[in-house]
Length: 374
Image (cartoon, rainbow, N blue to C red; front, top):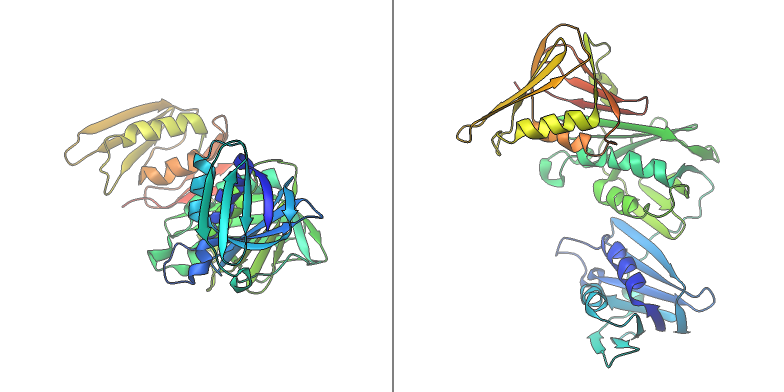
């Protein structure tokens, strides 16, 4: 394989592709590399990376292919070279034993050992007739509004270590929870071939969701195809195919924890609420942050008391004349949600008492539930 490439474009593509590489050290060493397939007829190089749970096949177009073929590119060293080299264009030449990178305007030359590309594992291509289509802008917003609420891999809750997908008819819903908060984002989708997740709870790992979101940065009107199979999911964008195995285990029935009614409904804008929470949280203990929220007619008071740091008190005027409610929250759970909303977004905070979960709604498409601290 021999190709002439634009340095910055290839650097961006390699950085994006490398997000699918393994973070664990007990997998095949070849997976620490990127497989490149140069296609002279299409003037493109396809970059492939996988940890055998999540994978990406990314097309880099506009390449000048002098020799078609396949090669294994040492990912970390290649990214370092592309980042540090000053030439706008570089020549990459590789075979089963070595990979060389040379400058076109300066006497740069780098040589690295390579491996046999035939040893690199592959993953399915997107050739399905059953799928849903979602616009990139809508999908990116839905991912951003849910992914932060997933459980960590080491939390002991594997079925929550990702985002659950519901695709039925022309409706898409993404749901994430770590047991202390719950995020539900909804949007429109177009089905093809009677594709549906009805009766299933497919959970896509957070790593795959983050990789997908990074691929949705260019055209918000681009159509993204989503195909969910019994044990895996495939996404196809204009330049990439992303593959992931689904998380094992059954996602909890989130509908049972959503309050059926609320005694108190408080309107507030996202920017105002976020500023007040961040200010009050300054004095909260780092290890166990806590802020007390006192909702009263025409006023919200936020207070925090640190063990050694001191105390804070913030007041916010409200258009509210209902009954007073006092409730404690971990401020982090509110800040992480508020920062993914537009500053001007209108929120409705729904409460019953100081011991029941609070529900925050943003329009008809986003719901966020957070458990209080006792």
